Length: 173
Length: 305
Image 1 (cartoon, rainbow over the protein chains, first blue to last red):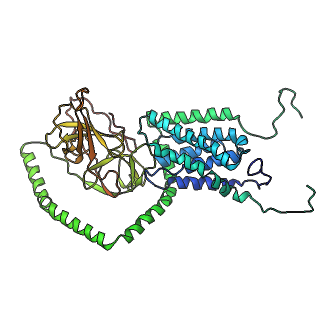
Image 2 (cartoon, chains in turn blue, yellow):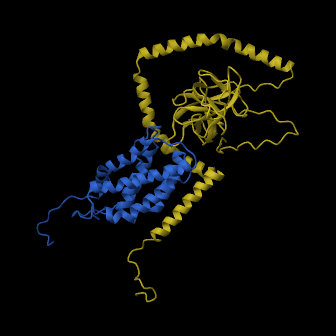
Image 3 (cartoon, rainbow over the protein chains, first blue to last red):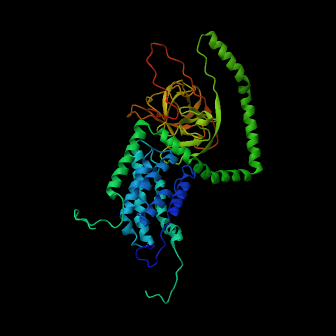
């Protein structure tokens, strides 16, 4: 794997325990009680999206479904609300992963933005359909913030896969 | 060996079922869950189990917020504590008169009721709990308190603070329970205008506001009127202050007046609350229609509009 398809840097394989650890950390960040101060991004959606794009063989709709159920319970929302939204996010991300990885990080962020906002719109549609109140437009700031954080997040989550650049002058290729 | 039956060569990598098949499976599973939870409320056991698993994680996540609050408390100046202390002392003196006579009045009330052969009023009892945090769900107004089914809290109990009614316990977990605030859009409470005795239904309207519904445009309500619980629902004890009328819009083109209210209790603030004991409604006479079943333990209460 490379960081992006056009990069010449070869990455070490991603470790399964690191993927699980980052997803657990995202779940932890999501349950930090901040009340109605909701402009922070949905960390689980963001990290899940990252792994779906970078490791589509390891993380997919099954992982998304389980994480969605956990978020439903942690949030005390309707069962299935996060699950459905995350499953659709994973489907989109896995399908688009080969395309997205050809772009530079800033262009990747432009692909990530509609996926994150779309996830929020699905949740909004589910809750408005069953008669909840509209949370206000400030809630969508989270999606935009998630796209902005794509750049630092990529470096952070790919860090364990980097290896030192070794310049071997005698290497044939 | 190359398969001679199929037209496509065998795949190099095992990738599981096709993405569209997976999508169909998980989406239908999620939709089934949505319907099962919202329509039939059948997933409470699963929710309880998963919530118990998530509880340590939530507890740890609460620690930094907890520490932050403690730290700010520690650095709150002596002066503010002093003014608060004086304020509390003054308030206590102001209410002492009523408090001292309360027992006497309750005793008298009991004797008079006995004389008149009326049913005794249920004494109010409660359990102090602390609001841990507002639930993360941005679509609803709920708070989490630190007493759960372990401490005997049941769904349906009323929650008050020192100023008035705060809401109702709608779901209990082992160590915490979820209180839906009065300002939630799905919450309604039967009230009475204290001044005129007019009965009505007060419904939540989202962001810190409430609305008095279904009152005629010429109803006897004035801005500044205090609304108290009427006790007709069998959930809230009668006479608890709930809200204050702030604005009335009597437009004759609509059959109902639009009456905006503001909760009296610190609905959107944090602090300590009192979970009132389950109210025992007096049994109806034998020949009356049968009352609907009481909601079971852990069941989510859904108020009808």
